[in-house]
Image (cartoon, rainbow, N blue to C red):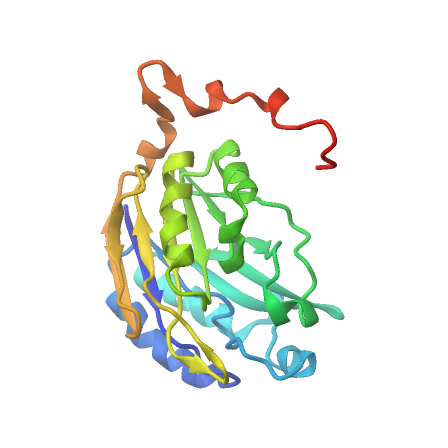
Length: 265
């Protein structure tokens, strides 16, 4: 199986320009089976207000951006996990959408909002789902979720083979150092698709990466350039959770000890 991450800079407020960029980059990823795009890939990130964010959002069922990606999936015979500025009634969500040539497979809404996102988006209400992509199990997390090991562990407990991580990272190197540790402690593959460029006062850090089940870096992008990463993996390796002949992380867990007296959660 080939995984690709597309590191690029969406054009804030200009969906046509964003799609034009992606059309070229997705051609470079044409041999992949699963492609991961950055956070909020349909809108850009540095909104001046909630009203601006809403004006650039789309409903999942009526999205020009997702229609374009569905056509690209049909054209290239791959699936895509993408960040998505989602409008649902009066609410906005920072979401990730998994889709293929037949349309949307599933959605995750970002649980842990970062900085000014708290003024714009609702906290995610989906929990941490894992979806079937053929025989492969795929989870999705978004950007600042990298800080929270509980989210990554839930993906492992639910049997994810691959976790897609659309991101707009602005804190240099921190997530890129931490995500491989989540991969090895949960024994699954991770594809982190970060963006590059600047929007207003924000500079995005690039360095997208694809990690193996031992935390090894299978592919890593530069910090500033738009580029496509590709790695060939055997996703079924993620189902072997044994660290030694006598240690298997799911069976060695001691969940009865993980709630200390006096802690509320």
